[in-house]
Amino acid sequence: MAVYKDLKNVKKLKEYAEKATPAIKKYNGKILVRGGRTETVEGTPSPRTVIIEFPSMQDAINCYHSKEYQDAKKIGGENFNRHIQIVEGI
Image (cartoon, rainbow, N blue to C red; front, side, top):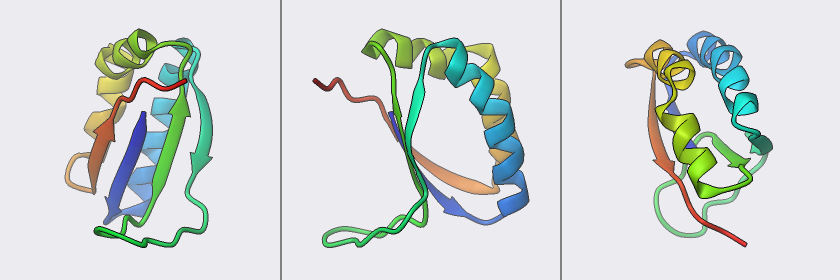
């Protein structure tokens, strides 16, 4: 699952992360990338990227739809934009 956010309120981002992390752990997600230096070579740059690895695509879907994650998502509201993709990988 990759999450891209247009940041408008860094404080709310921290609150969101604190609430989302237990949901991610509950579904055995492992954060591989959070922020860091980037270089956009094509397309629109994203101010922040988070990549989370799950044991299966279904685990990622279950995490996203869980009450815990949806509660965390509400914290974001209008404070940052998201672009979320769940991608089956190898």
